Image 1 (cartoon, rainbow over the protein chains, first blue to last red):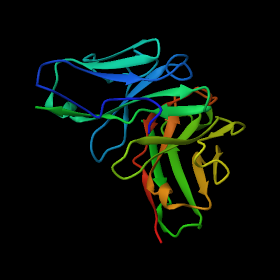
Image 2: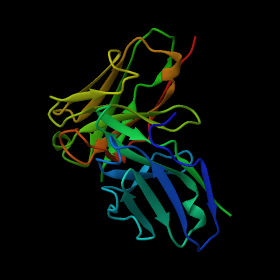
Image 3: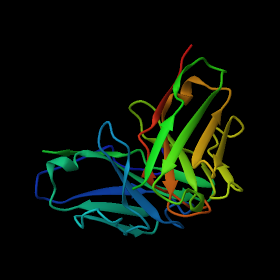
Image 4: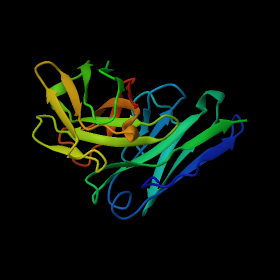
Length: 110
Length: 122
């Protein structure tokens, strides 16, 4: 059971937008920054979003993040077939003194 | 560019020990905290431990506290994870990951290695 809650799956069609939700609590998302990672099957995770809505250099602006209270979301616009991957949210948890991850959402591009 | 290369994984019996290493390059290793994160087969990501840039602060997940020890050698730009009293549930791909900051407190990874597989099997 992951500390952060994500739906296990999501789907979308090429060119459209898809959003992922991540729900936490006051000790993690409510008081710390949210990070989002993309993991293509067989590969290492890649940082997509840090500090709730900041993109590292090289990440396209099709990816955007937001946070409100104890929840966060990731949006992908202009969906592409190579966006098929698992997406994980993460945040530091003050009660556990360490980062916590969501269980991941598997994106299928139809 | 940032490169993180893990090694040391293998098959080990429950109760035994294993030491993982991570060779880092492409950035100022002694300026950043470093993490170990693991992923059991077919499962999600689970944070294991973090160490500050100078090695003075270390934090562990409850599931490994007292059994695993994270350390670093800044002169050799190497991160290590000593794993003792291994359990079947420790079976996972172990990733070395660089933090965005230096202290490790409230930090999360930005760059990740490719991982090294640890299998605990009787």
